[in-house]
Image 1 (cartoon, helix red, strand yellow):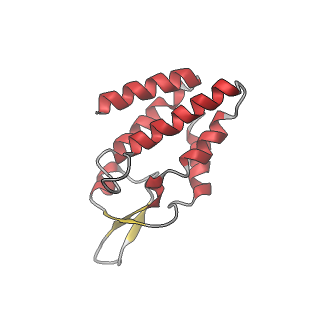
Image 2 (spheres, helix red, strand yellow):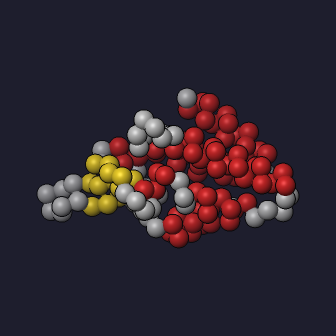
Image 3 (spheres, one colour):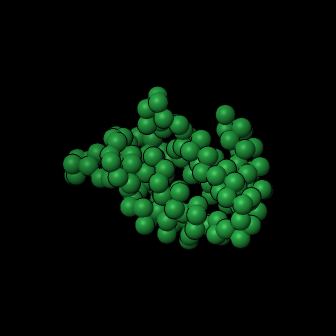
Length: 134
């Protein structure tokens, strides 16, 4: 499954002219690979690929489309940002982990709950995209 994701990612990023995004998007997908919201939802990797293929379709219609801005907006709306990863400790009732910066091991051992809005907030996710992808 991981090889299939990486192959599809490579193809779509090549078509977008955004090969420089490969490492960070693979790292993000690996972080979420074992986490599934419910049986009815797609994996993070599937959501990510769908988002990128929709950008590729937009690029077909407008060669000058602002791909980074469009990706930041669409990426910030992925269902995975509505997950709350909570680390329980003796000192605190629970600490929310930021999935953009937390390690995969921290996320995999956290209590996961579903919420109605993104965490971190969509503007923070968009900024992260603009700062980490060129």
